Image (cartoon, rainbow, N blue to C red; front, side):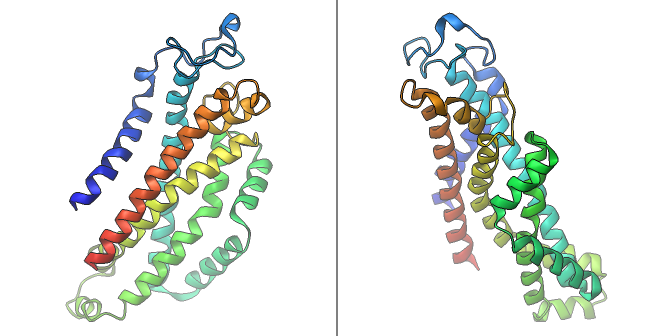
Length: 264
């Protein structure tokens, strides 16, 4: 468990910055000063300024609140909802199980990002609509994993013992089933944080997510792509933030997978 502490600490720092971003910015991330537009990194503006003279560091910090917090909330929603749907399907079976699993098959048949682009475009763009598009395509994965785990648990002796002891279905599900599948679902969710961040930033980069002047890493990269040769810091700063965040959560997910693999 001690080996996980550095990875939890790194992820915790990123979450701390995202939650308290408004108090950590050295400048107003939305204040424009055209006389200082495209200023290279210096002692005052550590990451330079963008085309409107806005401090890039401040926008990267505030962008973490938009990108990371939105990604974590989205992931929590689809993992919890998808896992509960899958657990209920695997636990009760029947026609509802067949219908929901066939529905999940339909969603899983489409490339996830392509479907998300189409859905976000149909919904009209915006961060909320982008998150909704990713939620529509994201829940079947957790439903499938959860259902498979529940079906395997139903064959275990302690499951039959709980039923013979007179435990209600609700008690069996929440006391004996869900705690035993939580580890696998937690590892899956941790590994998906980076994917969700990149997908949400990707939709914003394409103009289907956060809209200007909102500080969001993908949207910031989109706004700076035309200045890659003249002012590379405008696009490198949010790109580096995405890289560091995705790498941190991917490493955390790998370590969690190793930890739960040893304890099972």
